[in-house]
Amino acid sequence: MTSPLAQLVRQMPKAELHMHIEGSLEPELIFALAKRNQVSLRFDSVEALRHAYAFTDLQSFLDIYYAGASVLLTEQDFFDMTWAYLLRAQADQVRHTEIFFDPQTHTARGVVFATAITGIDRALRQGRTELGISSGLIMCFLRHLSEDEALATLEQALPFRSMLIGVGLDSSERDHPPEKFTRVFARCRELGLHLVAHAGEEGPPEYIKTALDVLQVERIDHGVRCLEDVELVRRLARERIPLTVCPLSNVKLRVFDTMAQHNLPALLDAGLAVMLNSDDPAYFGGYLNDNFVAVFNALPLERKHAQQLARNSFDAAFLDADSKQRYLDEVEQFFK
Ligand code: HPA
Ligand code: ZN
Image: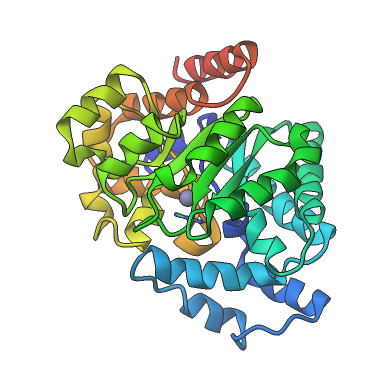
């Protein structure tokens, strides 16, 4: 799409708040790292790997996503992956990004906690100085594992507390409700970490409520199934709870059959604090601007919606008041 609206959404300043850094690992980099680290893959070529990206649901994606992450062994690998993402983000006019990482995916393979976090953190710091992208790192607990394993991961993270802005909850949603992680989230809250959780992607609206009421999260990742519960929608609007919506992910994982069926217009009409995100860009067919162009192509959205999405992205960010205002001023200036 080369319409003026597509140009506008590509060029406007924006923040990204839902992006799993391991999901930015492109097949080419997976093969390069496999070679560098002498890791064998169950795919013969970049093409064969890409061909396997035909997902039927969240779990079918996660199986391949964890296989892809198996090539990450050294601090430099984590740096290279994060740096590659930051260059893509810069090209998409991302001014601020809050990225997720899954330490348990790495510690389970014998990669020590420090290796992953210091490689990612070094790239984020370089991104601030060399690319002018502000950022934060959110550590996710894998919800298919136990709460005791999450608590043990938090212990490992304590020496690196200053590298984290918050914690989240990801992986298989079905049958793993937020309340399974009550104690670990309470402990994170005491530590002053920001709290977010994936909820209402494949799981029911009830999981959005328990993420808010039991875990006391500040943002809901995905949350698109909230529309099944009218009372919940009213509450999310009233309390200005941000929903980090990921449109290409939702179509790839069959949450919606086509982009034309995505409920983003209804979420915006309900006055919800939604913004767009790429989730796992290497697996779902694109980075942040690809998500913007896809939704503006397929759905009845206008310039005012683009402005709202840009505003919401900075409004929902874990930024200090001054930085947030500077970014919001840049958005208003862009749309003048
Ligand atoms: N949902 C849940 N867990 C995840 C995702 C997702 O979209 N991406 C990476 N881990
Ligand atoms: Zn996600």
